[in-house]
Image (cartoon, rainbow, N blue to C red; front, side, top):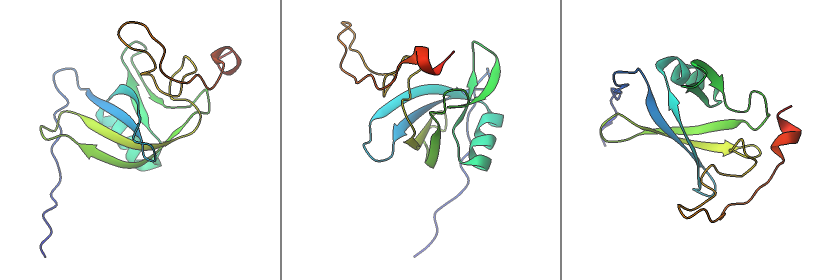
Length: 125
């Protein structure tokens, strides 16, 4: 048996960011989508905790840094083009800042299909 593994080259695009989908490692539920810079990816790999890049705040951030709802990264997968990541995570608490377990808690028609698991007013003061 031969080892086919080679380092994957990532395409961070013109803005230096790559989309990363966070997926619950136990349920396979898609939790959120955020963007990752090379520094955020390095921090994730070094700490085992999900780090992202906030485009609105223009800064690196650790998921759960203020809420305590951290994501422990079990595995990082790369898509075929090297321009998107999948973080397979163990989610502590809710992934969505609105209080839902997943950021994908509603349909295009506005129907709520997800579960609200915390009150954001109590978490983000």
